[in-house]
Amino acid sequence: MLNQYETVFIATPVLSDVQFKEVVAKFSTLVTENSGEVINQEDWGLKKLAYPIQKKSTGFYHLLEFSAEPSFIEKLETMLRRDERIIRFLTFRQDKNSAAYSEKRRSKLKTKVEEK
Image (cartoon, rainbow, N blue to C red; front, side):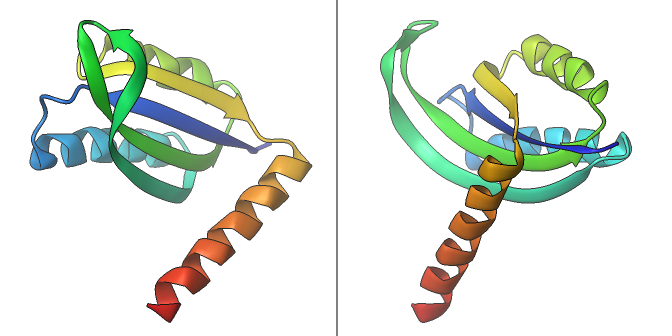
């Protein structure tokens, strides 16, 4: 049974745009290679951190929404911990209400983009 998950990770700010896209591609590919499906990705850009992490005060934020087997999450989090370019991450399983909210939020963002 596939559950729906959301992972937000913060990459170190010393990465170039190309390097950051490689990090995102690595974890998106990891999801699809393990029988998962990437539902949505959002690049939130370079943001100031609430407190310094590894002596860095900013980081590249990225949201990855996907569906996968529950056993895959342990593998994903191990890979996130091992990647020295990732300074923080948070993964959680969406229940039906948060999944519905995410869907509504995505459609709202999509209509905003289409209006521009």
